[in-house]
Image (cartoon, rainbow, N blue to C red; front, side):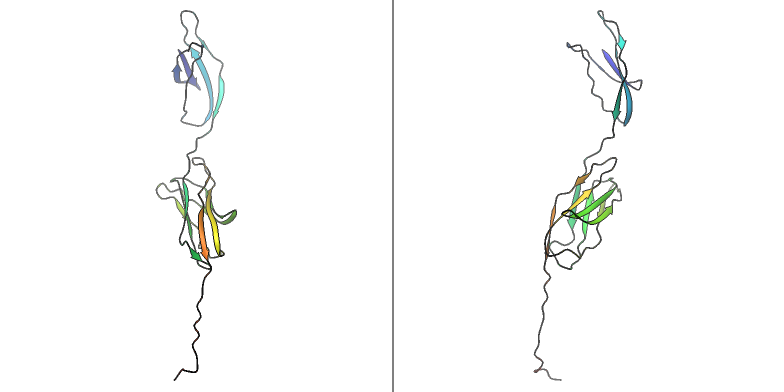
Length: 173
């Protein structure tokens, strides 16, 4: 039997295989530098021994991030105000950029809420007529991975105006 230790604390054991190897899968609960050693207990043919330490660096794991974006009015008309709302994984912190293709429309700061992690752009009324590929891009933080949302196609129609002309010669006072 081989006992494995990280910084002097036992993290598990493994049996010696026919190929004279012992394996251990270890999932550390904290990030940092660890000094790993393996100690063989010995048997009738071989005496016990401890390996030299091997330094292992563990980086913090990040969770996948859910990110969606919605529009307050789709389709909309030119000159009409539209607000885009991004929803990120609960607890995520950092910034979200609202993009029209590669053009940044707004940069927003997530509140880091554990129950309703959303943020809305200011009212935007500058979108031109046509289709716009709107997305949200999240910067990531220590716990959540950076991600870009699926594209929302925002349709902006040309605003129409109606003019009423009334003849003035038939008006009576």
